[in-house]
Amino acid sequence: MRRRPGPPTPTIACTLAVVALLTGAGCSGDRSPDHARRPAPPPAVATVDLEPGPVKVAAVKPGTPLPPGTAEGVMDAVETYLVEAVARPLSRGKAGDLGPVFSDPARSRLDGPDRAVVLDEALPAPIRTPRLTAQPVGLTVLVDAGGRPVLASAALSVEVDARARTGAYTVRRLGELTLAPGGDGWRITGYDLTVVRDGAGLARTSRGPSGSATTAARPSGEARR
Amino acid sequence: MSRRARVARRAVRVLAAATAASTLALAGAVGLWLTTGRLPVAGGAVWFRVTKVGEAHFADAPDRPVFILVVGNDARAEVGGARADALHVIGVNPALGRATILDIPRDTGASIPGHGTDKINTAFAFGGLERQAQAVGQMVGVEITYAITTDFAGFIAMVDEIGGLEVDVPMAMDDRNTGAVFQPGPQHLDGEQALAFSRNRHDFPTGDLQRTANQGHLILSALATLRARGTGASGTLRAVSVLARHTETKGLGLADLYRLGRLGLSLDPTKVENVVVPVGSGQGTRLALLPSAAGLFADFRDDGVLQHH
Image 1 (cartoon, rainbow over the protein chains, first blue to last red):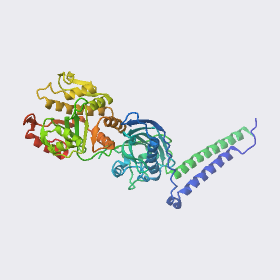
Image 2: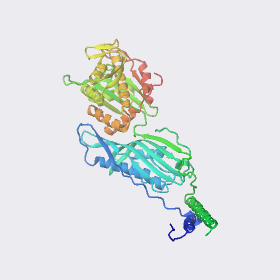
Image 3: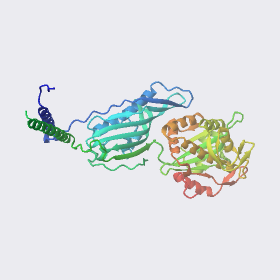
Image 4: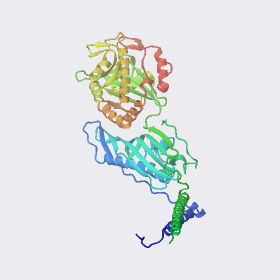
């Protein structure tokens, strides 16, 4: 059988090679001094889409129903936390506005060592939008004798997968948030969180509070007042 | 075309294709390197792994020593004029993670604000929980920040709702008055049994002194039982709802009760001392504080922890 007429194989290979070289040349253009001074825009902030889990009512008067909108309000606050304290700092380097997220005492607490556990700042910059997945959030709401919600706890199990120039890494956050109604919605007044950051991508941070590299694992332990 | 020429042409094609493929791969690698600053030598293999682990806990609980009065009152439908049958001041030192339970014999003579000297437990009948807190605070020399009381029915219901208590009964008991019939050793007590254990005084030569020590022991058993069921936020919220159902509180709301609960549940029962205030015979049926009580109170009041007793 005769081959159909067409470009000879070397021609195809050469064309591909030229295209590849041109692609490489295009990339090499990014390394020009002008482009080095203008870093690529950061990837989009990961979207947070939480599923509500079981809602338990711890009522002082047994049988008291949960006031309408309570679970939704708590879920909104948890979602805001994940956006402002996890997703945004991961992509932008710094946390968003934490004022509406935490109560004043809890926010003050974040000036200390708890910050590295509660927030995802100063991690290697992702080169594409990280992926955030969460287990359904179980809620327990304390309701007083008058039927008013006083406190709530939210069980968190969240994983973020990111890829930086240094490689891929994962952030797993597990624990409970305590929330109370305040201002326009619910705010976090306490937390019991464990964070595990794992992966080759954490070998060297590309940014940090002082620009220093972080390679050592933070020893496991409790940050207590 | 001769065979030799065909072979030569095929060799040229193969060589050209191989060259092109190599160039393609090299160009891709160069492009990737220029883009990411890394050569793809790892090719998906994990060359090293770094793990950062951290924990953080914050419950907005008190961070300074706090003194809490716990009162078991004997209010019953058939008996009027409730008195404080059980009186305990708990000093908690959050920084040290330690605490002390001072067990106050109910017949201890003390100054009752507005009522002269009387048995300290009469303050409850005179002015409720607030007056009782004043009298105890004055005697011990501490500022009682929070006071909490429950009666017989509330105590039984509370213990039953949390599923009973695991108590290591320190001695054999056989008291028909209270129904306290126990062999020594660890056992599960329901609400009725826990109440009987805490009220029994007839089985002991030291009567009410041993009873009040047993009540402190019961508080520690409750702490251990609750800790075994979880000390997290959701478990504490549930425990607080049960506690609030059966107690009267002064100076604290549900959120405070939660914070105190978190503080209490953070304590290892082995780091909580249970001490009976030293008393001897006094005027009439009242007991008098022994001289050593002054040193005990001084030791207790500075930080809620006993260093020398």
